[in-house]
Amino acid sequence: MTDLTSKPTALRLARRDVIAGGAALALSAPAAHAAKVIIKEAPDPAQAAADAQAAKRKINLAGRQRMLSQRMAKAAAFVRLGIEPERHLEMMKGAYELFDVTLKGLHHGNADQGLTPEGDAKVVEALNVVEGLWYGYGAAVKHAIESGAVTEADMDAIARLNGPVLVTMNAAVKEFETAYGNNSISLGLAIAINVSGRQRMLSQKMSKEVALCALGMNPEETKEALANTIRLFDLSLTALIDGLPTVSIIKPPTEEVDAKLREVRALWTSFKPVVDSVAASGQPTLGELAKVAAQNDPLLKTMNEAVFLYENA
Image 1 (cartoon, rainbow, N blue to C red):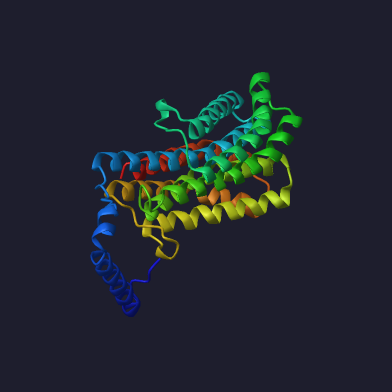
Image 2 (image 1 turned 60 degrees about the horizontal axis):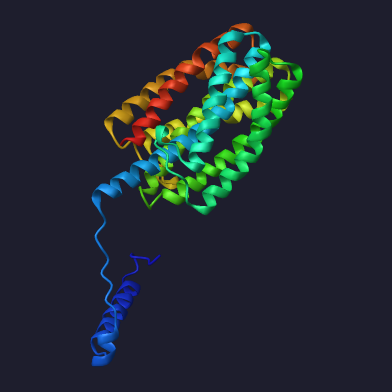
């Protein structure tokens, strides 16, 4: 890309273009007759608006897949712990079904979800990787749903397989961001939708990690992962509210987005001390588990509302 801050370079390029234009005018009559003049049509505003909305929808729903991958694992862990098992089984089923239909929609299109078939080769390649991993992870989740319980073997498989699905789905979101940022929409807005969407996932990931600590699954590793998840959520929320130009995170584009993010911050102020305590001890109490089970969904719901406000900004 031309460095517009370099005036000599810009002037040289402008001079070159003028010279090239003069040469074109000096073509011989036969050559001029043979030359084809290509006139670029002005973009259709209605189509540009439709393309922008489709781009924002794809980045939003692709980002939501990350959250669903963690929501399934979180719900399974709470079922395994015997904490509101019926509610968490239903939660696991809903997340499973939504992940499955959305993954197909992102790839092949789904009119009900406002998704068009994906045509970008790199995005399709990334989705293919996710689909391959979803086959195994989805089977483990489906087995638990159909049996109405989460066995030790189910939990081991879910704990082992949810991470790779999350990592590859996150890579797919980045491909969506690259494909559509500074194309159909601004890169700053694309990044904001991605990062705000990631907050949904982090709310579920940290709740999953609290439950895995209670189950004693890889306690030191899980404890460290929880601390990192808390830190990333906290830093990202501040960046979304205040803006962080160094990584192209824009300030809230509307007053509605700003107000909703501040609602998230109020919920986070109450939720953070609980998960911080678990990250410090690695051994959640029954009271802390109950608080996480009760408070993570309002945090997720409000963050999700913020993402949809970004989508419609």
